[in-house]
Amino acid sequence: MKKSTKRREVEHDCFTKCFLPRMSVTRWICPRCVIRRPGRIPAGRVSNEIVRQMDFFPTFAAAIGAPEVVPTDRPIDGVNQLAFFEGKQENSNRQSIIYRNQSGQVLAVKWRDWKYWYRYSLEPGDPDADNRMRLFNLRSDPKEETDIKDFNPWVISVMDKIAAEYNASVEKFPNVPRNARDTYIPPVIKK
Image 1 (cartoon, rainbow, N blue to C red):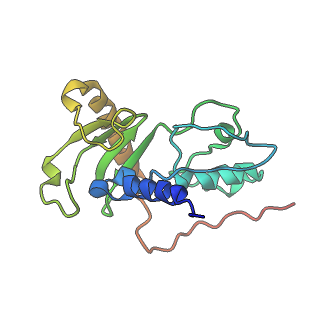
Image 2: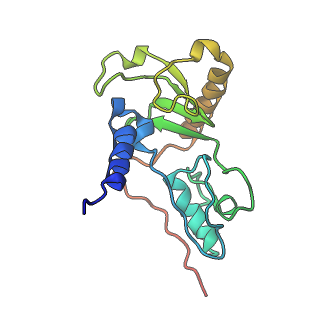
Image 3: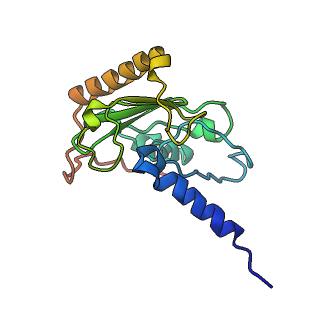
């Protein structure tokens, strides 16, 4: 009897679509997220809302009843998604994502179903990326193949506002440098 390879083909196809074409940043973070907490998180729910891995720290802190472990002496990038996961609200508490390079420069902004590249690379190491901007609707063009910025200038103004707010917050509250020790010590939780 021949062993079915259907599952392997599907997994390979997801890998190919998510990680290989044009090495787009979207493909680097497109893997699906599965959340399971019987009795608290409804089973079978599917959503296209935005959640980032950095949201899990404040979400898990809230889930265990210890929101005080989340730093309050500075802004953090994660947002509490517990009410969204538990089905108490329809939408995620996050509407946008900033993509930045290692030096902190904004490369792209994803807002709802839209993604605007300020520096669009056709391939890794593209020397002309700084001179190339692209806008995509990820719902209708998930592979980011058709630039539609000329037809949707209103979206760019939204993206510019999100990028400006991010840059202002980083200027006011600089990111912790790479490999630097973090001075934050969480409080002791008493039972």
